[in-house]
Amino acid sequence: MKSLLVAVGMVVLCCIATGAATAGPTAGSKKLSAAEKKWVTPALEIWNTENAGLQALGPELKSKTVLTHGSKSYDALLSTLSAFAACPKAVASAGKPPSTRLLAFYTSLTSACAALDTGATTFAKGIGNLLSGKTTTGQAQIKTGYADFTLATKRLAAARKQVLDLRVPGLSI
Image 1 (cartoon, rainbow, N blue to C red):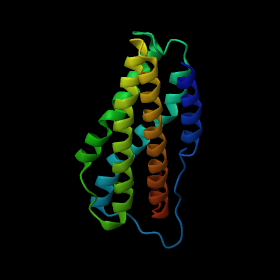
Image 2: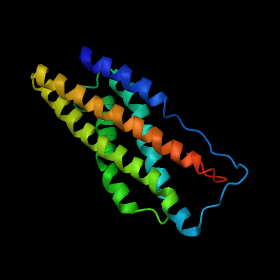
Image 3: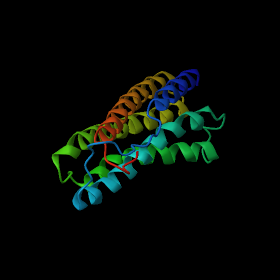
Image 4: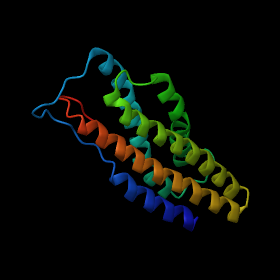
């Protein structure tokens, strides 16, 4: 349980780095084409969902009942981990971007989703092992899952920067 709480603190610190911001209009910025707008809207929703999940993870794990089947915090954690696991499929559904200027964002988002999926699976296995008394294995899996969440956080931060670097009026993340 102690390693779970340490992981929580680290995840919360990492999530702060990916906090939301708005890209305002700047001189020389280009507007998005209709095809780019159509593609980027769901892609930004995916980014926002996953970033919110990482930010929610810390408070969810701090709950004293997080390892109690059926508790509100346990169910919230499972919901967050499920969203992480669904991320790669969501990005695949959006498809590849219609222009090269969105490719870096797409690549970072895809990579972040892969890390979230792997982390969610490993983290969930770790919780299962903790609940079944396999403390050493469970703790190791939780640490590995945490490392994947840290990697995903960095990749989401990179994706955010790539969107902001486009300097498109009205485009926010």
